[in-house]
Length: 261
View 1 (tube, rainbow, N blue to C red):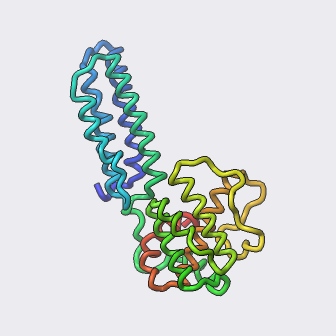
View 2: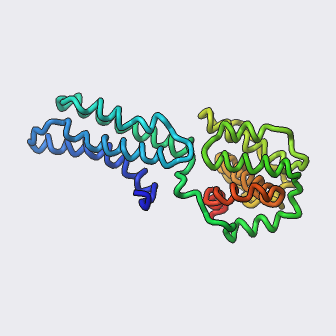
């Protein structure tokens, strides 16, 4: 199963959990009075897949891990058509919501994070381009590495705490820490997007990996600010704290997606 793309498993969860009870409806309408308990296999398999996706992440979501147990408890007892259909559809909805929670609060699976011993070309180009422009102390560089690695693993509470430390000496870097802290807090507490939200200033544009695009929505600007902040912290850590490079290499798959690589 390790060779299966997690995205296929994510798609399979709502397909199976909703598809099986809907297949049961079609069977009943066709005159096959099969116990609706048998159509719970979709929810059972979906629960196992969700638990697997939770298990392979660096941070374990105990709620998602426990779903197979609840699926067994809910569906082991025979039920009639109406109650079985309602219960399975509600459970399918719960699995889908838990999948979204797992995906956006607990990071990507560890099987997609590791990226070898060298920086990818796009990451190296950005780190080289900003080497002399982003002036960070070794202390700020190490803190930047901690923030980036924690955020990449989905540990948003710890990422926010690390980003909230002593303000960086360099102004653009200080703004990057503040932006990541704001986003990490929003994600950790499931808060709505702040209005107004923190963003970089025009004088920071030469340091940013993703130049601002005029006329985009606030939601897009909000997301781009986070991407730029994480990438700016990455280059500060890479160039100022060589001891942390193994940790940065471990999460460059996450960072590469921000650069579109």
